[in-house]
Image (cartoon, rainbow, N blue to C red; front, side):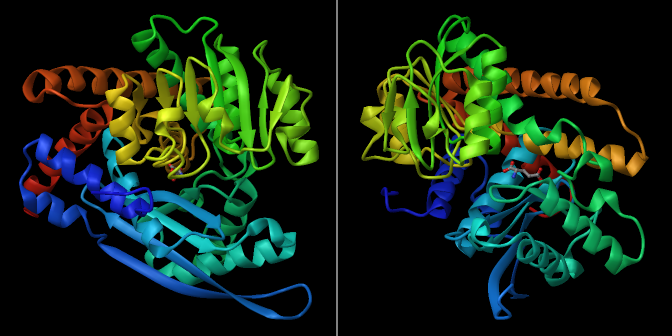
Length: 422
Ligand code: GLU
């Protein structure tokens, strides 16, 4: 049983085991999926601006390839561990399967506070990452994309390093690139946009309507900021936002574009002239709102604070922000949780679109990608909802996460059997 001090990997395995039992899959499936196929550790030396050499620990975890090449982001974060990276890669296997993408799951990470690096140091580190893992990367083998702490510029340096090493253009070997280098114009905001589409569908399904529903968002990085932007365009009233500087709360509604501009210029949304300000960076999760979105990092809603959630609907924009114990408490209280592998899949789905366009040397244009992404998100939401209904009839008490995981596992299990792995 997990506790609030349980690691993200322990929590991920609790969810995996539960869904394998619920879906009546054989235990061997758990045995295979509870370990990554390959995990590589590297040390990346970087000459710092003051002449010193700093060595950064880096990982690339290749969790499961039964459905295709490994796919998942690279995270730059000071506290990330190999164990976290394994958990995140496992989540990618399940997310990619649920979205029907032709991918397995992978994830990379570097233990670094990227905000403390100069631009030149960040470039060195990004290029060093590619040199370190080059033998196990490639457009048909393992395709990294962005995650927390990495952005289109980092992906540009990475793809450039890869092209230099292979002496040929290979735009499809990384996704989340700037548009000028073959990036899809939607990819930058795709995760938040996808979250907004799912938030709307979930509000209609579980709250009766989305029109003027109030939304509070924890996290104002790539996911949370675009989630807020698109949800407000879709008719939600954003009333609270938290970031590293604290929380702003305004029951009359926050002007999201203004908040974005202030956060961009001053480094935190805290400087927005809201009705109320809190130092607490988690406060948005606990305000009086119809929907709350956990768009920051993992392990945010835990056994200790789950009682404080007042909303009826929780959206997991980040990976694993709600622990299994917290989810149990929320479910008992009648709160619905939209799981990460469904809610935040818009990022990797658009990475898939980018990859497919790069391979075809084709460009669909922004409108076309966005409407395809909307269709994918709607289709996935409805599929999970239907599976949830049938599972409830078969097994009684099940969550949407159970239904999403069972749906993802059905495809993985079928592929493993067909290939003779099980
Ligand atoms: N970091 C994204 C996620 O957690 C996916 C990255 C990618 O596009 O490969 O879903």
